[in-house]
Length: 133
Image 1 (spheres, rainbow, N blue to C red):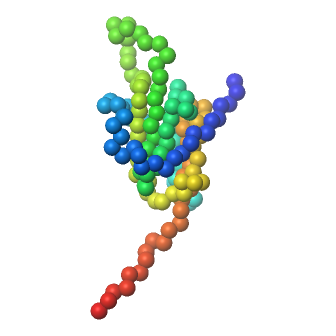
Image 2: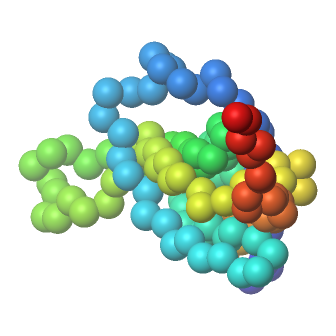
Image 3: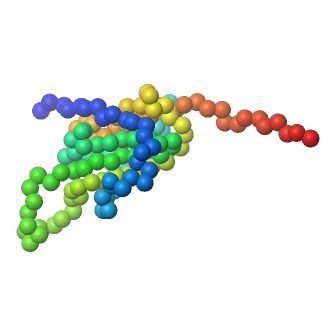
């Protein structure tokens, strides 16, 4: 079986604030987040989701992942013995702990896992403020 690896575009976008196009019921996406000395890495299982059905955006320090998992075939309500899988729109937003370089960021889907790499930007931790008399 061939490995599949597809890139997902990351966009810097503030247009999603107050976005009325989001459905009323949106499933939550579970994520793993860790950091190294050089980057923040976000991983999430997105099995069954096509890369074109994913949207990864960054607004200031808020990372948002949106997508849609399509149902292949729908059984009648009376035919379900268990119903644990979520189908439909999902979204997850996380506040990043530091500034990142959006231009060098990348997202890929590989074997059903979304991996987002966000390189850290070095910023001064403190800036002296002159106090006047």
